[in-house]
Length: 387
Ligand SMILES: [Fe+2]
Image 1 (cartoon, rainbow, N blue to C red):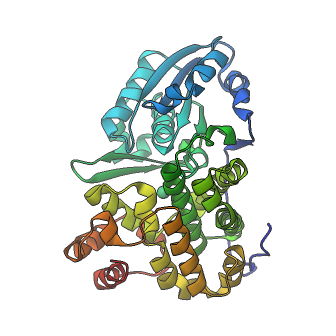
Image 2: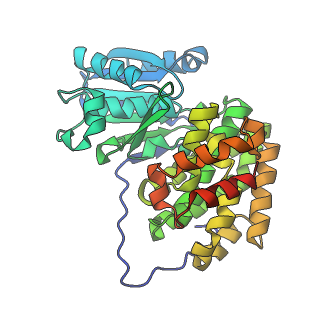
């Protein structure tokens, strides 16, 4: 770890860390995909290949992947939109079942990866997605292997046991957390993120950057997640702007690594208040996820600070700052230069919206991991400060 050691917990403080996903990182490593498919599903594998709507086809990656897998049977599902619905996810599960696929390869941003992970987990079962969503204990069977290949740097879905579907019309978010959602393999190939447009690099980067702060101050933080979160924060501090603004290839690669480190941290430590508030901001104002979670980051950093004083110094070193105030200023500056909104008004929120945003956020599961409990009045006043 490059930024100094993390204070150890009390000697008898118990914790557990698990990261079962095999992590393959490096430029050009996508070439390992055919051999990894063979390893997990045999030379006669029937592959369900899940991607987003168009970008992979447009930049030639999809053709290259299909070419590499051409000795296998491939079923292509390329209809995954941003914030996929349960219906779209069910279509992928149905296709996997009807074509008897025995491995899922998910390539794309967080949405295709989440659909791929859910499909791999649930396709071998007899019931539909919503039955398992209502009662995850029904998932008492082994899922198919899933290989996840991110083409953005921020969802961290390639290394987490979480996946989400969205019913935007009903304003409902369906999170699923299950150990079987960890992909068997994550291939993080920085060549795949070089072509990300600046706004996507900024929004996805701020998502993972925010998650690393949340993992660090989470009530479920522990020494392993702390080390991962700090290294992630240090990498973003030094490389996010260059990655977003200049599209610098080395900075993009470091942000790709940082994104996965964030997921490795919060897969155990979990996310907290910024993600809880991000849900109503996305559902009610159609705010891009990365912006919806990062807009509250500087304010929550300040609000949660009394709970992690013991760990403040390593965080300051990772951010190259000498005070919390400087950290919050540095974050706002980075966000502004990367064209991420730092005020709620800029994403369409008015003063009259604050009570319903807060009321909804306080019901989100991430609030249970925030180190400080919050009342509606406290939440509204905190949001007023960033209106
Ligand atoms: Fe996120």
